[in-house]
Image 1 (cartoon, rainbow, N blue to C red):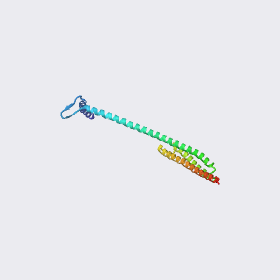
Image 2: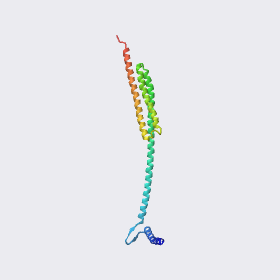
Image 3: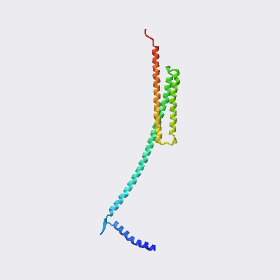
Image 4: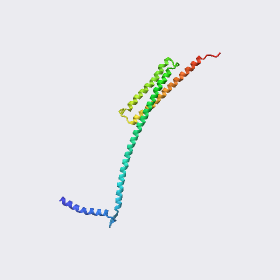
Length: 201
């Protein structure tokens, strides 16, 4: 029973499909009373435009993905470069700090115008700066290790920037202390010269 119905349905739909196909693919315009005029060239052109548009959209999406990947790589490189610059500056600042502390401390303590009770105070001040500098370098080494607090590059860079500012402050501090001790030495030297000057009679 079902087979007979299926065969009947196929017999009815087949002529309709053939008629529609001929109508759409006919070279000229197919017209009939009560039927609208249809130009298959417009349909083919529209289909081509849709296919082309889909291709362009796909290409644009691929391009956006590639640009995002390039941008991420550039950001990583920039972060790495900035981290390198921060580490380099911190290292240079600390090297300069060590040299200044060593040379300036020796110069100040070797001066005959520094009193014996001042030696320990001056040494402690310089040593305090040096210990802080060494702690900073240790901390910087921990920050640069990959597993330190699972930080992102941006977070690591923020900490390194703060360390760089701190190293500059320590450098300025030791320069300021040296300048102050130089002024004290110069003043005491002048006092000694005035005291030792012979009066003219």
